[in-house]
Image: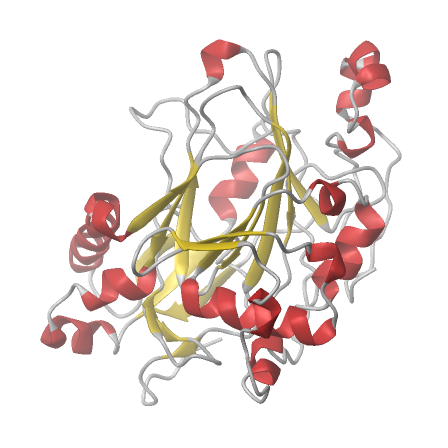
Length: 362
């Protein structure tokens, strides 16, 4: 268990097991179906994060873990690498440190043929994730019964337990995971347990590259700004009866720099997202809305800075939430097929301002 203690208030089970009993008896990953326990968690407490990628900087060859790969392909010049021939289950501590550094540098690394990793089960997922930081427990999402540190996404012909906005012309919602936390995630691991025949891809964009596209004078201005990130809307979505209808930890808001610096690579990245960033501190409402809309539109339109992951069985994807944004593509609804995924989400440091002179109120 993480530093967060679980306070059990109810044994009510709203999981899919009750709704899909027959399916649970035949589905290979029935033990990983979403459970919506009524547990209540206290607020998260600050902790010191030591990025494992920083240790790899001292290695003679920080990319030594890739030597066994049979294929290493850059998905785009600035974002994303696809790797074959390496078994994540075989990586020792040094290799995991090197992996963290590679993900920080490339933003996104896609590993194919990792069924043995996926089939290990939740205890192994937790052991893997703890190497990279304190495991986050999501306040509203489903998780495998007894494993609240594993965040699940789930949609099938009858149910959806995802954050999906129905009154929009698009399912694309660019975000960095739970950026409202004081210490949001760093290296994140995600894989699908079940997937539609086609569709359900995930889009990624480099927030380092989106920042570099802007004029130096505008970037200099953005470096002086901070913004409020809020989990209130997400909590209210669940309180309305959607996504399982539970809020296990009260929502929080925190102020983060609009431009953050990665603690290991030193890369500066844009750190706002349409899902959780609500306003820029110190600006009037119209000014804040105008700047944020421009930045969101910039992210939306920057297809030349994006990579699209097409899922295959056995695929495990790792990304660095500090320098990327992503969005699921919900284009498979008419197929009635299941999309069931698991995310391991270690927290990282409180975002570091790109400007040393920027003082945050948190």
